Length: 270
Image (cartoon, rainbow, N blue to C red):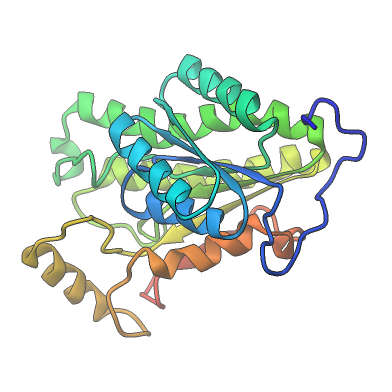
């Protein structure tokens, strides 16, 4: 039954073995790194997963992994900075699965599409605009695209991906940190605006995570150095993020909205 036909809004009964059975999740930027791990975990929890990824080949690979594991998945080439592309993704999702219950706004310019490490007054304005357009405007546009579907169902979960750098600041990433701080603010506004519609909006803020598929020794050494500032030992990996994401997507967090959860093993935040 599609969301437009539902006469009983709200979450369906779920089993503890598959807390997201019967749900449909859209994960932007799920072709690489942490986004790929998010998509796979949501599938393991029972959701059908839409891989909304600008890198079409990477999106297909993630979808194929989920399908090979016995899950349901659909790869849809999607540019989150383009409202038309997002609208087409929503249409494809409804055509395939009939509903959208969960949105994970993970797509961002940082790792798979590298950005410069420059002081704020040395960042190229074109690069500044690009990072804001994808990381922050893209999150806003994706919410705008899926919310009408969630409103018709009377239920939804939006999980925006920020970064712990939004809370502590780092040198040389002013554009990235500004967007991730903006994601936190947007999350809190949407929690108030969408709460009456039964839509929960929360934020997951990872710490410095070894998310690249083939990290070199230099990158690993950098991550190990950053790990020394953590209360808990060990370099963060995507596996450290997916449990919190699963919680935010599940009925267990239905009383939680407008929150930013830092998953950084206790790294100091000023």
